[in-house]
Amino acid sequence: MITSRFFTTFVPLFRKNMERKLILITNDDGVSAQGITVLTDLMAGLGEVVVVAPDSARSGAACAITSTQAVTLHRRGDMEREGVSVYVCSGSPVDCVKLALEQVCPRRPDLLVSGINHGDNASCSIHYSGTMGAVIEGCMKGIPSIGFSLRTLKHKCDFSPYAEDITRIAHFVLTEGLPQDVCLNVNFPEVAELAGMRVCRMGRGRWVQEWISANNPRGMNAFWLTGRFLNLEPHSEDTDYWALDHGYGAITPIKLDMTAYEVMPNLMSLTKEAE
Amino acid sequence: MITSRFFTTFVPLFRKNMERKLILITNDDGVSAQGITVLTDLMAGLGEVVVVAPDSARSGAACAITSTQAVTLHRRGDMEREGVSVYVCSGSPVDCVKLALEQVCPRRPDLLVSGINHGDNASCSIHYSGTMGAVIEGCMKGIPSIGFSLRTLKHKCDFSPYAEDITRIAHFVLTEGLPQDVCLNVNFPEVAELAGMRVCRMGRGRWVQEWISANNPRGMNAFWLTGRFLNLEPHSEDTDYWALDHGYGAITPIKLDMTAYEVMPNLMSLTKEAE
Image (cartoon, rainbow over all chains, first blue to last red):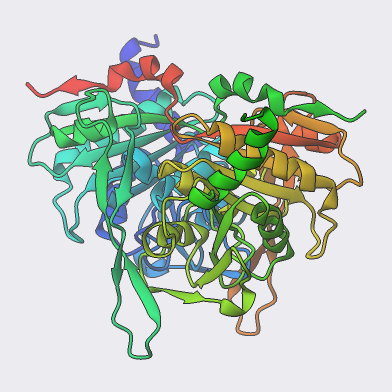
């Protein structure tokens, strides 16, 4: 007789061998960053892991692709272990995803995770984010994709307060999938204990006072990018930025389609047909 | 007696002196590209022009920002003329906009135009586009912003079929403005005569077969990015891609807010509050 106890033991083992989930990992801080190391450890508990990450930091790479030079890809056997293969790429985070899918992955990944970024990617920062660039690329290719970011300025952080939620969200997406052309942007505040997790919209904001003059020995005009984030709706409790400011993790669903449908009627006077 | 004839003559001249419109121009093909030269000529008829463009091509730069090195800014007096000042920047198109607004422009621009890009930025290509990266940055800073792109592979093109529409659209936006956090992505097909202009949504598509192996004398794995665009809805007549395929120019309103609002209810099981 086949008991239910038998099934609960047998079926998972069977599935594990026959169709272990494949998880692609990348980031924009580079393969050596602490965030991607932590993320790899967490994901290794959920499936087979392939890491394809930039060889060094690519912060602010957005969805940039490398079109003016060849991109190199190296296997880093020294960083591998059972169930985890690691490759580094000379290109952008988006290049990493494109290379992973066509040149590295043994089969189509069931999940793409990017991060854990050192620095948040809430509000308008998503547009500049290489972490989220990789996620948008994965989503474009039809792979359920999640970006994880921590609001911190540190290279070495305590990621333990977020481990359970990262695993929980990844497991949810592995199990449930995501709607077509939608990915997730998950941000955490740097806290000893989260106040909770919220589903949020992307808040309105912009960076201001963005340049400082760089001393230059040859009299060139040179500037370093810096800046201060201006929250344009600090009291809106449904935004990602509010959540971070109040100790919550923020889960924001992001879509590829950027069309402002509601504005289309206002533009109809610009249409014309050739006579 | 003040006649209407008097007003039509006098008022524009008065306005011209007192508050001539300021138009900021950038691109991702670099300051020497034909597209930005044509765009500058067209915009010089609508107001005072400031060009701040990359010193060379930055195709595929998306919304990338330069965070790991200083960015230089040079005035190019040799490229200037009455009403047109020109600066080149060592950074990305987004860096150009950020530098223009804080370090170059004598006052807040009334309009930002980017392009004319050599290559279309329809469908998913908007995510990779440096042309549109600059437009998104302008929009983020509250400036009415438009990207113009031509579906071509050529460095030298005949832009004359699009001149009237570019001027007309720019004049419309200078006069009417654009809604908050919305910019325009305008794409043209390479034709002798446009079939017309349409207001479109962003079509669904993705790039496939994206890498070719690069010969490498030292045995490295190296690849060049290439690819073929896969239109995922070739029969949808309301998309930008359909318009271009059928000889129409496409005007697509684009919004900064990428939140997938319709998906938020599906994620509510991921929320939690600390006990």
